[in-house]
Length: 320
Image: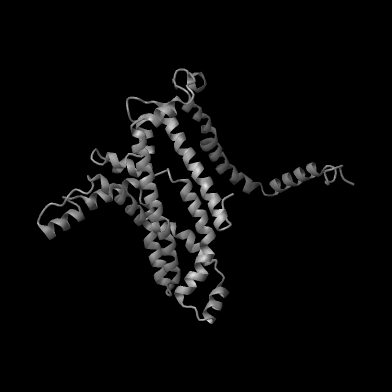
């Protein structure tokens, strides 16, 4: 007999809770380990969201967040009307889109090529060598860039002088070169590591599909095109959604370390501008910098929704 209109037996909620607590008691070690990442997310992701209120106030440290006077959308208007708005937005989108167009397909191509190699020994060696650069810290990476591309003491400068007898142009000081150096150094550092998830997806491809294709006379390229690519397409679509959702989040540390007074008009992005307004200048305008950062996050969120909607329409798979 059930409760009217519910179709559930009496006390089913209590029975469900009792079963849940029983499972927790039986597997308490797993739930104890789960507490660590949950606590990390709550402390460092959810609780700080209350600080977004600063974006709508004229923050005064002595008054606190809730005691500071309310200014509404004035901080956002100030940013939109600033002469820096177009500059930082243009630079952020230029570097992000350039990086997305170059960095997203290369790990897929690399994974497909590596998976097609017939010799496992060489395949493992190449994979190891290519993902090691990922573990180089940002500071060391930028130091390598400066050392290699220096027009006087670097590899580039020495080769230029050897071939021409003259000192080469300083490509690090040329603002138009900034996005190319940033993106292609990132390709060298991240392609091998980013390919791991696609290599794992290719490892799960049913061998019978390749056997059937071989029987039908398919070449190796045709098997890659018609067997491997469709199998990793759902994984690629998820990774693309995540990449588009972070399109406004250009690597802050690397950009900041690569900046100089000569390339500032091409390298100033939203995250570095927020840092300079909020912490690295005499202004220390926390409300203004929070408003800019919040605008950046809202754009990322909108792009994530659009990318997820497009992926579900085209491939049928999405994050949510």
